[in-house]
Length: 299
Image 1 (tube, rainbow, N blue to C red):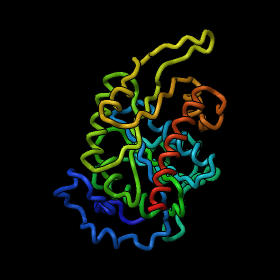
Image 2: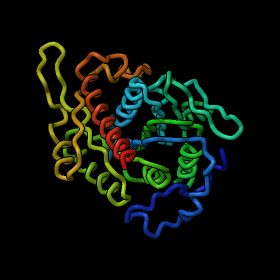
Image 3: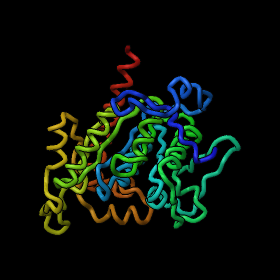
Image 4: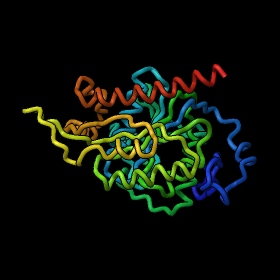
């Protein structure tokens, strides 16, 4: 990879009001850069959240695994520079990405390709102490200097909030992409989701939908449902903003165990109600993108 201090924003879509006055490299120069890339990516889904602790990385991993299980060529990119969790969730802590002399080679997990800053560190416990320009440069390199090859879907796990990392991702992605926003039901999380929606609107980023995670706990003994984090905040926020509500994912202690032991929940617990809820969300996303692809071909 090239010098990580590179601060250019290659691939900026320049679609929204937030891009006006951008000091990054001109779009004409960006179009030339990376023109010989072997990467052909059909759809990119940026998994975002307004705040931390809502299970965004869990959603990203299970979304990518489910798409790969359906036979789609899928990549998973972790752009959380300071707290990369994807390697742990996929049991890749001891794996390190290699280079073919020109590009980085993602790690393969079955038929899925994975890249994370955690796969480049000498020690998985090392802290990455970087300012914004360094992070923007590395994110650009993850998008253009990793040999993803041909993918139907690239799922990007973005850090929470509306700061350096999600901004760098949305300004540097080439091709079709949209955001999936994850929240929990309570108002404090929904308020931050509204900021994420505003962020996407200002950048001209399409939103595939809002997903409400940790939405109720069903007791395995009595089947009584308890709304630990309130109820309905994600759906109300989506409805008020005119955005598709993708559904609710209940709390399941097995999800925590799956994340800790590196076994994707939707794969190891496929028969459970929570896994089926995940599958319904994935099917909605897949159908929306399939319809878009069909519409483009028809046009």
